[in-house]
Image 1 (cartoon, protein in one colour):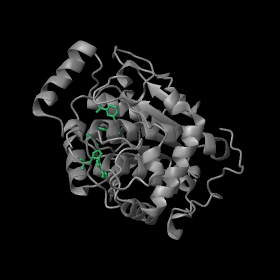
Image 2: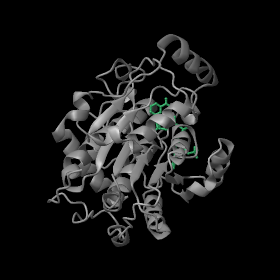
Image 3: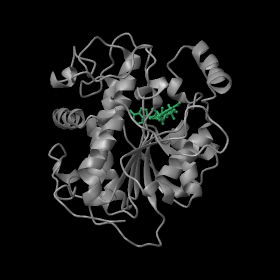
Length: 350
Ligand code: NAP
């Protein structure tokens, strides 16, 4: 892979919102015989748990970045993952201080880093009032976007030293208005507006990125749109200078994961059935994990950076991955740059 060191080289870019200790990566081993290592956030459940299994089966070591390490061990054991091929490290992505502590703990573990998988997320569609992170930010955006933003940018220097390094983020169809699933108006499509809520500081009473009244389901979609924009912005800023491949993916509708734990019980019964039999969008947790592992580890996904991978919305046996076009909302470079700048500012004061 071509590597050009330039002005965007992340080792020379001082992320000023980091504490001094988390700015500098220790040297990592280039020993080609060591197993490749991935950090997977939210590896205690659903897509992240099964992605961990698929990576371990490919010979990788997985750092399970989780908020409940005992649960991660239990769940990994339940589905037959060899715990010796994993390390469990605590992180609460909703807390900026916790993310910074995680980076320090990862560095102290002495592992190299070949892939970072930003997978964890909360979806809280039944909130009537915004829930706040310890830093005072609306919890979906704080967890899904801000926490991952700090993690990604802090770990770029470590990743850059990895073998065939990749940074893979879970996107979703419901945040891509280029696709039918992204135009569903319940409660509203993802839309960051003119970023007025972030411009205003994003603390109470502000709860939405566009500065409009709180809609919890939309807050989730907005946070996932931020994930996809951030991946493209990382590609634009750092791919040429670091060689890191940046990608997002939609693994299919994994309708029976705990992501839907806060939806009404009737929804949790009907939704998987509807996705299996009506939309045909349903994907098992195992297949979703396998798809994540492919994007992380397989050679065919290293040939392009800045791509959003999909296997389509109606699942067919043998479906092939393709680069799914994203909406203008995700591809607008000026919007991406401004989202990056405002996020930098907000995670620095958090
Ligand atoms: P899930 O089973 O609920 O998994 C979410 C994971 O995130 C869990 O491990 C959870 O930890 C973790 N998490 C939540 N808050 C956290 C925090 N503050 N700090 C650290 N970890 C935290 O949901 P999933 O369906 O597998 O979702 C995984 C990803 O796939 C998400 O990014 C989602 O947007 C994306 N996705 C899912 C679907 C789908 O249909 N399910 C479709 C497209 C994209 P606990 O185990 O402790 O709860």
